Every structure is written in C-alpha cells, then in structure tokens.
Amino acid sequence: MKRLLNLRGALSLATACVAGYALYASWSWPFRTALFPRVIALPILFLALIEWALSVWGSEKEGEGHAVDFQFTDTVEPALARKRTIAIIIWTLGFLVLILLVGFPLAVPIFVFAYLKIAGQEPWTLTIALTAISWLSMEGLFNRLLHLPFPEGLIFGLWT
Image 1 (cartoon, rainbow, N blue to C red):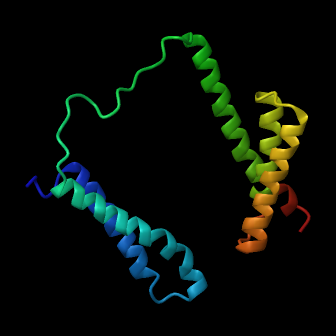
Image 2 (cartoon, rainbow, N blue to C red):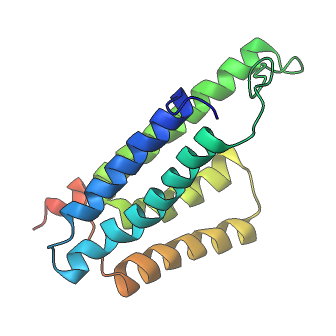
C-alpha cells in the first residue's frame, strides 16, 4: 500500500472537503437557492473521493519524467508566436470589456460575431449561424429556462 497522503491524494482530499462543505452549507437553504451548489458539489465530492482512493490504493506505477512533456513548437517563429499570444490576450480583454459595457447575454453573441469575422475570417453564413446559435443559447438556456438574471452592462445602466 502506498503512503496514505501524497500530493495527489492531498489535493483530492482538499477538493472533497470543499465540496463537502458546499453541500453542508447549502443543506438548510431553500431548494432553488441550493440547487446549483448541490448539483456542482455532489459530483465533485464523489469524483474527488474516487481520485483519493485511486491515489492511495491504485496500482499506477511511477513513471520517469513528467506526465506531459511540454515543449514549445519548433515550427512557428518566436515573433509570430508572440504576435498570436498578444492577439489572443487582446481578444480576451476585449471580451471582458464588452461584458462590462453591454452585459454578458449581449457580449457573447457580439464577441462571437466579431471574432469569427475579424480573426477567423469565416464566411457570412457560418458567422451569422454561429452568432444566432450563441444568442439563442444565452437567451434560451440562461434567461428562459434557468431564469438567471445577469447584471446590466454599464451602457444600459445609464438609462435606468
């Protein structure tokens, strides 16, 4: 039998404790309020306990080297890789600013449209179709089905 507490086991036990606390804390809450924490915490608790059991009693042999041999690509020039990295950081920051300005439900389809047309240079049909799907998903799932209110963006908050 392996040590009862290795790094992998400690992480899984810590995760199980957090999930267990989320279940315990939500126990006395009303059903609708407690639904989300319970739906998330219950599978996390079971998976974390399974991971802990595997780390203690599993027969995985220690391999040499790292689990994943991370290596930068040799086929892309460093200047091009730097340019692409900066571009994706700018797109991500732009998405966050868009969420702040117009709110999450509108920011997602606007971002999908802009990214597909500008960065992806996709055809109009695909861009419009995927933008419509993203809007329908945001509206249908979060607003109509789950009734999750998102805060208004700063722009729309000026008129209220």
